Length: 237
Image (cartoon, rainbow, N blue to C red; front, side, top):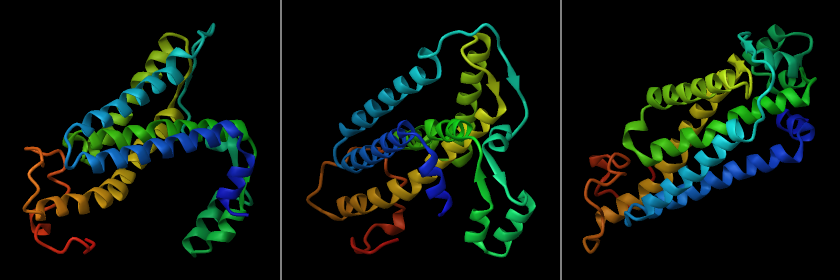
């Protein structure tokens, strides 16, 4: 059984549902972004998706929690992974197998020892995937890697700090790492999804002499470079 199969077989239905919801939100955003190429009003629909996400984000991280009697700071990096996964015979052997491209053998060295801790790590990553995806969808300013990752890190730092001082949770360095990884994954998905699905729509609109509904200063102007205009629509770039 592959690593994905190992993880899936050990996860609770709630985590699977959250994964499906995240994928559905990204799919809806791609569709709305594609439609917004010719109709500026659909940009507000993308903003509405972000507002819904932000509400769910605040509910999960702050509003749904009850204050505890103490606050804790955990500064040991990757402690959550050490408590959830074990490498047999060891992590060095795992890296050695990866180096020699023995991927199936390397996966077989991974043992899940704590489903709860593994779920916490995955949920902290998934929580920030829509953030890394939606921000560059809404504004060109966020289409730089360093900007999205920095914003994701600062948002996570703010949440962790609020949780600590309000006793709504612990300040965990692993949460910072996982949240930032999630924002980065969302940013990568933006380029694999948005740039692929929106670009052809943009080229087609610019090539059509009858098309006069393209809004000025369009949000997607940077998706299609000037040298792309005039090429065949069906050509992939």
